[in-house]
Length: 308
Ligand SMILES: [Zn+2]
Image (cartoon, rainbow, N blue to C red; front, side):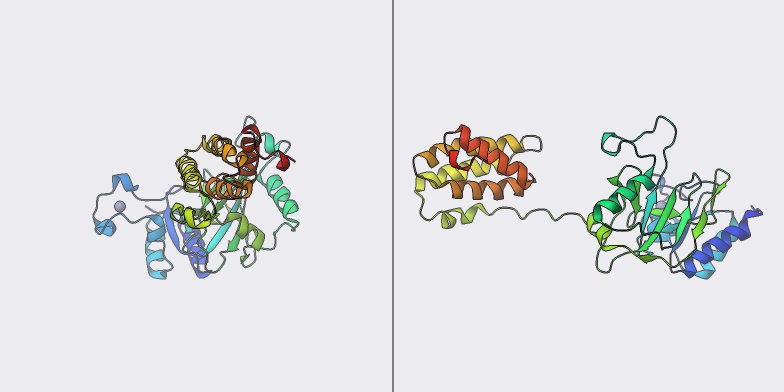
């Protein structure tokens, strides 16, 4: 198969590789990876040892690149993870029914939303970097990934029409043509480092450490065996609560333990602190935890003083 596109696409692949970004072929005229998907893997050829994903196939090797892009007018995929890139993908609505959800009301596209994110962070729009206009008029802002962090692709977690491509993802490189429309460099520059505030927003929050119930007696050494047992029972209920029932579980525990606070067997401080740890360790935000505990204690007849 030959095509007038082949030399241009070969040049695009070589240009990306020269920047240090490993490339792999996308289907001609398309943005999907060339070759078979994992579910249709023949376990032969390059997949003899197991299916090789585009991320694993992506290469900087000039010989491989030339052979591949001389064979067919493949579009060019850049494997963002191995390329040490984080690409911010500012998309535009697909059609007039594709409108912003309430929290982004009034925003026309991903660029608008990204501008608001920058403003909230008190930062300027980070436009001084290698930028590609996508075939539908969106933008890909290329940034180098922060050292020592493995950021994964995100879809809409930053905001409406704002995706990121990192490990587990790829971008269609400049010079590719999808559905007759080109991806073009609109700002020719080196990729700038990912701004720290974006890196922070994209870093998954660590799961809270599981709460060691075994140390409960030591923490409550002034409490009676009876109240320690009661506390343990309530904490176990909280720790086994499912998503959707977590708030109610914390409230219920505070409500039940309020009786022991009233009788002076437990201190309000101890109950609050244990339930705060347990609630947060199952993923309930601190503010929700505090509110649930306070109302549980008040409704249970303790903690009036802390109502604020
Ligand atoms: Zn395979």
